[in-house]
Amino acid sequence: MPTDHAQPPYRLTAATPRPHHETTALVDQLLAEQLKSEGHEEPAPRERQAPPERLRLGDRVLLDRDDGPLTGRGPGARYSRRRLRTPAVHGTDQLTLTLATDTVDGPTRLRIEAEHLPAGPAVAPHGRVPVPDLVRSLLPLLDAAEGPVPLAVAPRLLAPADLDGLIDELCDPERRLPTVVASVPPAVPVDRWQQQVLDPLVRQLPGLASLYVLGHGALPRFNLALEYHKVYGGAVRTFLPEVDPASRADAARHPVLPRGRIDENPRRAAALLAREPRRIAAELPLPAPLSAVPELWLPPEARKAPAAPRAVVERPPVRLERCRLRIELPRGPRRPRCGTGPVSFGELVDRFGEFPLLEFTGDSKETLALDGQSEADGWARLTWDGLTALQEYADAAVRGEAGGDFKQWCEHTPPGCHRFPPRKAVRGESRTVASHGKWKRQRMLPVPPAVDSSCRAFMGAHLRIGGGGTAPRVHYLDDCSGSGRIYVGYIGLHLTNTRTN
Image 1 (tube, rainbow, N blue to C red):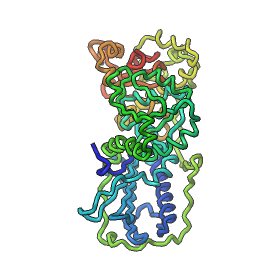
Image 2 (image 1 turned 60 degrees about the horizontal axis):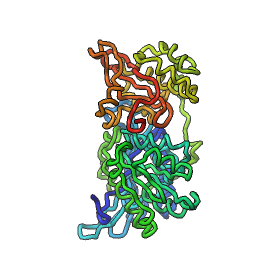
Image 3 (image 1 turned 135 degrees about the vertical axis):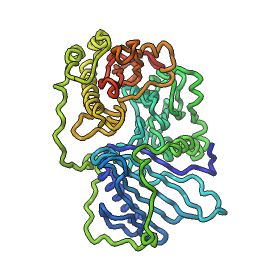
């Protein structure tokens, strides 16, 4: 366990739906603004095909820039990297931003690393590396997330209607970063508590965890749903990955920071709260395509650090407004959907044949029963959207062009294809569900004998239709590499798990 005197560097790993060229332009703009505000020379815009370069922007202020293709990852795969070094007490502060994508207009993966380089071995440890100011400026503009964990700068206030989404996030088996959930004392206004206590408390967490504060109406319902993992009275709980809400023993894995400790020493409490998220984020392995980015190499002439060239041409402004950030590029015509979406599950079952590479093997009674629910029409449309995306994925997968499984397809949906939210595409069930005899049997669903001689197969992969513990799910088996089809074995209310038990 790291101590307060040997903190790991700050590391943020995330994905954004923004394309690579757009995200890189935004990073360059924010870096230039930061340098200018600190009184340093503003670098000129970088040419697309320019070689790796080092710019001297002031006394001991160096900016390294390189871009290029990612070898072996397709014609549209590219990366960009910016490394800024600035003087600090007893050493140098280094900020490295790396961006990579597999497709020209697809989403972008980014990693931001901040560390202190001591002047020599005899220099005392620098202590905790703070969250870079650039992260606080950049995150709100990117819709950034790490898997199912949204990365924001400030906690999101939750109402009762938001709890299903939070519980889904906590129980998601693909969550790798912590989720921090804060409570508010019953007699204290939420906005005052958030401004005076929570904002300073979570100041070291942007990019390392998702942040939520339970409103007064949401708090009792949350504690009712997670009876062994409660949070109340102004305490803050850090939910580590792999939450098991049905396990009393599991609750001990998810530390609680009580209000008394927060009031006693707010600065110390903030450091304690950030310690585990910082460690987990620092140890995350590099995902593709970031793992394919080559080591930074500067030619000898670039290492001499020439003075930064002055910008002699006007830099086109990068719009920071979220609603104006997207740059519209020419796109091919969108692939037509499989007809107009149904208004009921009865219609959906009747029209399942419109998906030639999907085969429904389940019990239609479970599906038709959904029409008795108040949200049936919206659920039916979302189910149709998911099946449409599955059909498009299967069409590419049987040709060997999908580039991964359905989850990866949702994260990197090709232009012209229907996009299904990646957070709603789940690769498999949690270990608790998969190892529980009764719950596993519920997910042993029908398949043709050519797929399995028992005529049953475990279908842990599923689509979330709506939020919460009982909202519908679509369970399927991807056999595109075998029979060339996807078998949908269940469309109905959530099967039994740790939350529906």
